[in-house]
Length: 504
Image (cartoon, rainbow, N blue to C red):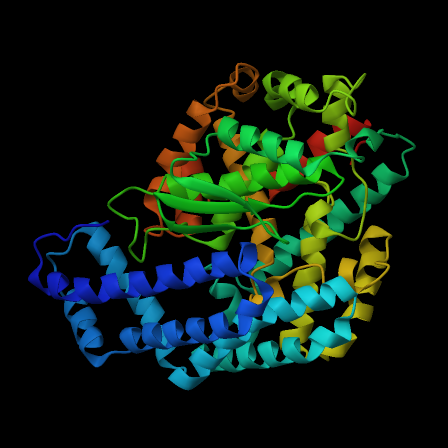
């Protein structure tokens, strides 16, 4: 935990900061439990507890004494860089909460705690109408909160986006997603019409959950996840939560597609390694976590796709997988496997999407969220609009709500503005990758099973800063230039053009 410097003013502020972190940690623990091991009947009462904790958090953030101390610290030239960053982050947190009445803040926390169970049941029953009233309530509250936070005529969706990624508004994202729509959508169509066929049938079958769990733990440990400081659990929707750099928890899910579990573990391990590498002096402070959702996604998608779907990565790992599943992978060569896990196959499910079509799933969600927030698209119209966009961009149509508008948990959590972070993360990852290739032979390292230089690069350039820098600052300092999505487009065209022998 961070230790204070010599500033007496900051020393007076510190107990408030500790209280905020304790309340936040308790909410994270309850959130983990609800999505992993808590019995279904526990949800209503646990949601009430989360509401109480949220109220306590709110009252601490909006305490007048805290405000006075924060303002005094802002004028204190004796603060260390870390203390100053924590005070800045505190100011942002206070600004976001102070414009929202406590009762509304607590009610929303309780609502989203209950909503996950409503969403899960509706998804299981393939019944969007059962979730729609809850979703409408969540959306209306989030739009109200955004209106309270908006400055100088700021658009509501820009406010929501800013909560996940600073300095990336609709103007910026329209350009980014516009390029993806212009280049990647027709490229996917060209690949699927190329006549090239890749066999991935061996990835689907009777893969026991016990053996999948065995390989999941092996892969997690192989890429660097520390089981002395982390936990791997199971949930309906894989996720990662961090209490601090000595307690990072991630989950996966098992089904009859063995690659789903493997790559969800690699993906979540990318998130987890970011949090495990947060320095001791930052952890359990307001800047002791990843700087943004986009930067977090850059780490997970870099590990999952750039590293995890490369042939070099599997040279030392594939023999272990074949050993665990000898019947299913009999006669399947390393090259067959690598081609299979990189196969481009447009489908309706985001979490099962290949690397190339994945950003199109995010493009669709981005356009839908803009319609919901800025154009007042009725919630009940979501399934049809969703299906129409999938048909237009990917040539597929979801069969039901469970593989359509109910497939993601995010909206039940109130996370409007989150989805663009996934595509931004992939673009950040490609930019880092281009820079890393100038300084090290990544394939040679992976073939030897040595990921340490890769982690050292990421620790040095990304992880050690926590939230002390924004994503754009990290990108510029690490690579020498601001966000440049062309690296991502070039990466996708080169990788998949080569795989399918098709030019853009």
